[in-house]
Image 1: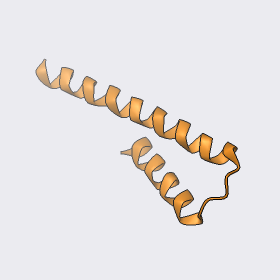
Image 2: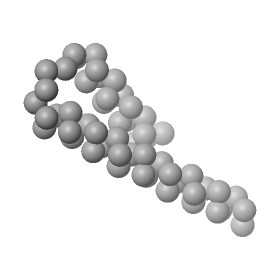
Image 3: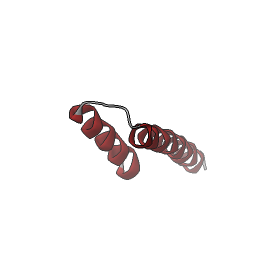
Length: 53
């Protein structure tokens, strides 16, 4: 029972972090700001780590 509750809390926390990261990524793309390519790659990497991690 405790393990199920812990896994549920962890899953919810990861979902919230993924949503926040997706919003940040969309702001980066839509914002049209001139950013470095490395920053763009870091944002993609973090997004996939949250998505598949």
